Image (cartoon, rainbow, N blue to C red):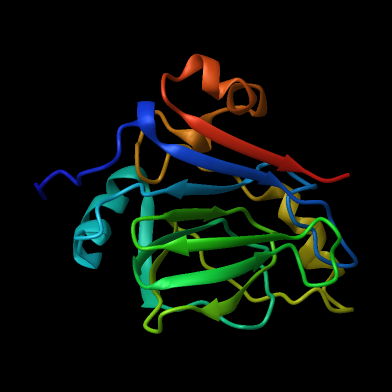
Length: 202
């Protein structure tokens, strides 16, 4: 059995949750209502990619690659995506460049981003050079590439039917992926020390 991954306790984990409206032909979170989630400083900077790759399958998540993020906005219509930052520091854009409800976020080593199906994402800036993530997907899922272009309407419509995660990718039977919007909104009072930031655009 692999050694247990050292994770920030849920009681002190800082989480950002973003509900991003659809824009043009990019679905974002609107069809299914699952937020973009960022776990800040979820694991120590010293954590190796292989340690994450050993841990994630215990929560029904399959690591598939180590790489940076593409600089073109794209989304996946067939699967949700789990991105564990293992090197560097970057600025990312979610929701599409022309979307008034877009989100810009800075991530760095130790952060985890859960990107729901349909949410457009791209790299804006590799701040230090060498930005790298472990990219993973729910067991049995394969990813596609969609860009919000004409002809992708069927793929955009399919986003709402992608099954949500049955375990938190890092924490298992508890964790932000499994919390309802109401729980996230009341997280500060129900989870001692938890800092949960929500944003929503209509």
